[in-house]
Length: 45
Image (cartoon, rainbow, N blue to C red; front, side, top):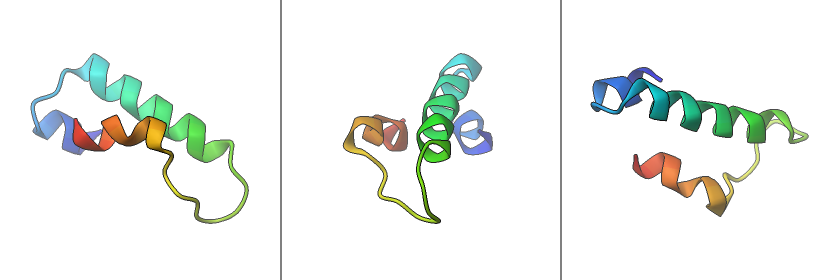
């Protein structure tokens, strides 16, 4: 979240992206998993 805010993104957008990423990660088994293509836009914002 801090990086998104420092990059000048709106709090609403940062929260939405953080929630989407956390929802995916918390639903997966194991320690590490590949980030899905459907969430690639989060990395670019």
